[in-house]
Structure formats: structure tokens, C-alpha cells
Length: 216
Image (tube, rainbow, N blue to C red; front, top):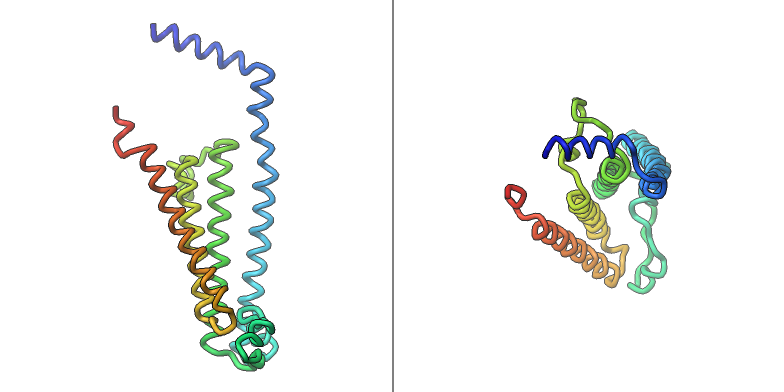
């Protein structure tokens, strides 16, 4: 009985899909340009990372122009917000301070975390929705890729987004005088919403696939 079923399945595999299902199944390759576009976006992030790092190194050696570029990047001043608070935008610093270094380093960490998010989307999405990469014997295969599926990928992406949101929120709190109270509250509420969303996704995934459920 089993031999007949296996022979039937092998014969159907040899015949291949019918034309319409074959076209529908092949449509998954339309996602390939999207993943290639994300690779280009990651290259832009790498370029931005090195530009900011070069500014940090130049500022450490006393370049006032590099300090001004860092201050403009990490400490933007909204004139309208400053006027609403009854203050004015601070003068552009000429020396590197601990706050500037901290904000720039957090920005670099933010770029790295976004790059990690892109890698998870590119590699995990391609492996899940387009085609197998056959990395089982590759020494550099990511540990999480061996058991990745759509649910696991959603949880990992939600966790990565929470990390990125945490970095943005920390940068905002360090530079709180440059933001209005409404902006601070809004960013905090959005971060809490990300946390609750990730918890809901993880809980839903746990309910749909409880531990030990595949043993039966």
C-alpha cells in the first residue's frame, strides 16, 4: 500500500504541475526584485554608517566642521518648538562633547540594528516565501534560519523593531530639550504599542503551535 502511494507521488512529481498552478507557484519569484532592493537599501545604510563614523573620527582629532556636522545630525533644533518653550536654539558646538558622542554612537547602533532587521527580512523572507538556499552544510548558516517559518519570522521582526524603537526613544530622552512634550509622550506611547504588539504576536504564535503539540 505504501509502495503504491510512493509510486503515485513520484509519478505526479515527474509530471509536474499543471499550467495554471505552475504559473501561480512561479509568481513567488516576483518577490525577488523586492529583496534585491532591500540589499541596495542596506548598502546605503552601510555608506551612511561609514560617513557618520568618519565624522566621529575627524571630530575626535579636533575638526570643528565634523563636530558641526555631528551636532546638526544628532541634535536638530526645531525653531518653532524652541519658541514655544520660550527659548532659542543653542549655538552649534565647536568641540566634541560626551552627549554628542553618545547620540552619534546610538545612531550607529541604530543603523546596525536596522541592518540586522534587513538581513532577517531578506534571508528569512527569501528562504520562507521564494526558494530554499540549501545552507544546511554551510558553516556560516544563521542559527535561527534552521527553524525559520512565517510565525517565527514575525516574532523576530517584532523583537527587532522593539530594539530599534528603544534606541530612538533613548536618543529622544537624552536630547529631550529639543522636543516638545507632545512628541515625547507620543514616542513613548508608540514604543509601548510596539511592545504590546510583539507580546500579542508571540502569544498568538504560542497558542497556534503549543510546545509538544507536534509529538502526537
